[in-house]
Image (cartoon, rainbow, N blue to C red; front, top):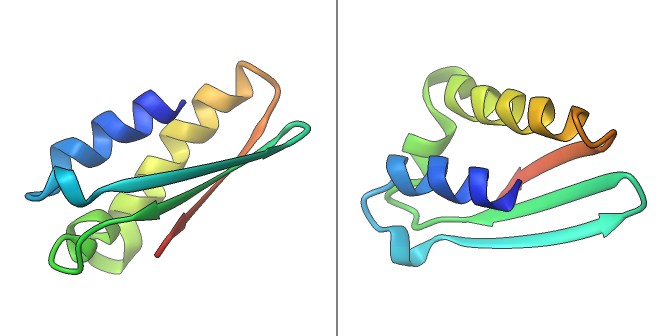
Length: 75
């Protein structure tokens, strides 16, 4: 799932070197902490949060196959 997230985020941002993803797992719960450059933050969040909602939906669909729950936090 981290590969999926990195692919999506890498396609959106202008500075992919600044992208950092932290992962913590607790049983069936996986929490991603995403850090991007401040100039790319708006691209990742999108207008009214539509882009980040779509990213979360894709991750939740991938996680459902493994019976896990996904949370995505953006710093």
